[in-house]
Length: 266
Image (cartoon, rainbow, N blue to C red; front, side, top):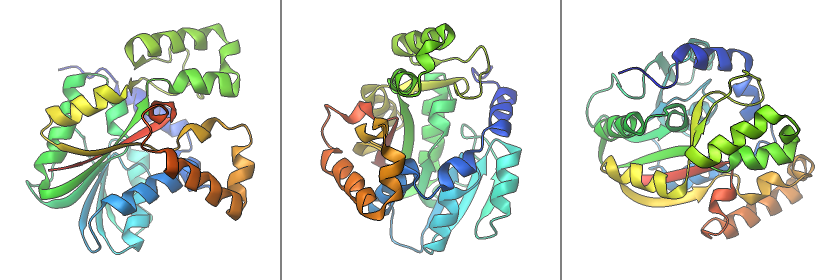
């Protein structure tokens, strides 16, 4: 079956995008919130965690520091090289839809990128089923998705909607969830799929999981114009995080977050 996202395009995108730098900045709301949510959901250390599509290993390194045994799998060779240089966990090239790991061999599996890089529903469900296969009974899944409305909000926030080509991208995203970047503009992301909350719930269920929670990662404050300044100050950063936490179960604002995180159990 031909992949709807060409691996060459994926590798090309991440060769120019500094994914590691994007997440390692001290004020990265996406990283801080993801790690806060993972702390709540993951089993206590030491546990065995498989980080599928883990990129350069930002979360894997953090989890290893907490005492977990972490193995990272990623489809981008450059990411695997960067991850291996961390030296605190193992890393290998791999495919989310066909994992090399043994059945029931991990306490938790992270899918913090693959679901939005797989544009066919059948492939996303296959990736989820593979994660399910390698997780022990009672184990945990943490799966991230990009919200259907992310490019619309990002386009107005960053002024991309001044470009007619980006407006076409937004319209297609809203209608179908399929995000294309025919111009290969480096800031317009790569070919991907953007979920509604209902779609993400349905795909988790179709793969055999019991959904525990579906939460916004950055929340609606991701679009606050002065967010970077707020996040650079510890007191104001704490306020931002507390406000997002207080609203994280309100379905009226969940999908306004750039990223969603589904937490499920086997």
